[in-house]
Image (cartoon, rainbow, N blue to C red; front, side, top):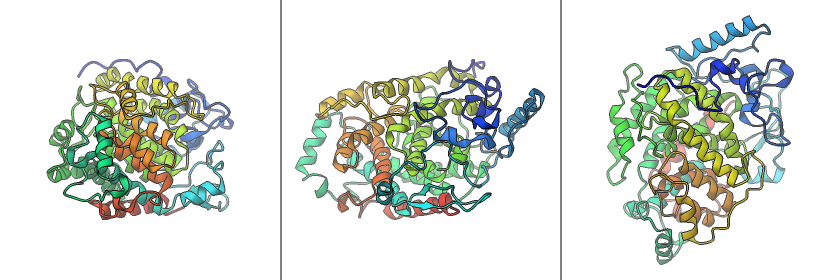
Length: 497
């Protein structure tokens, strides 16, 4: 391993921030102890977003899944140093536990209350009233997504996979125009019935199920990571005809579930693929609350680098998990990228604090961040405002050319940075139109099954199944497992609300 390099420019380490989560300037300003390098909120929305909503109470809660400090840090420098020492001790503890389930921090912005009644009706959401001080129920105006929204997310993630894969014919086709011509010959989306053997799911869904069903056990901490590692290894026995990626094959071959830290593999300089991103939407479904952001970061990174130990790879997992969180909370896609940019410094804090291949990770870190900065800036979304400034890209060839400009090695959507990028672009452009979502996020000349898994799953969380032709999901391979996992995740995430 190389010597530890300094943190990438603009990314504050835990030590330099001095206050953990509050070091980013997003703690409750009334607490009197928010400090460090400020990261400004979107224009006109002070303190909003997941980082803002985490609040003062958990500003020193760890991103490694340990128990958070349950009170604000003391005022004196000496006491703060002591608190930071406790924070670091928790981060490096061998025995790691997920954050305890408690009431979510009160939103500091208007994110949880700004959705209209009509939008909540369409999303199948219900308002959960407050229950007085100390209530363990959701805060006022905290909308709970219907279980049907979770089911649509998981099922449509499989639909996007099977459709984009087409038994390997479309995943490896580099011409979107050819794919769309073949779709016309098939009679269009409404004429297709997705079922094996012509339309199986690929490795994407099998590994996404491994994540979802592992999370659905309710395990926490080290036990959860061991469970996920074991399920990823077991999933490789169900890959006949599904074409798993070489990095996933290599990574799972290096896992040693059951052994201490057997879920860790060496840093991989070529582990930039989207294999971690494609299987991580369920993480966001499991941890949708602002108070769970540390756990979300921890699970996303550690599960992601079980196969893709490279920031471009495992940060893709964090991005997709975060999309799941924001979708579940009713946030519009126009805000998702800006939230990702705010969370990246916290992700670096975790990676540095975990102490695994820190130098290698630091050296490779900037690419993902810079690629997303460029994309969001080009779409007018760097601050999370809106509407997005999207180029028309009316033809398949024009969309392929645009996606190619974001790609590594000439294959759009194959990497951890641009698979969620293609998915987000499709979500922004398509709105509630399923056909347009497929045209932009599923049927293109790149890694179409992976972008399809992400895009269709996120779309389902917002729009449900009603607009999707029944033939695309009623006979889908593993449909029952996808639905059942969604129900268990919903119960774990929202059952106490």
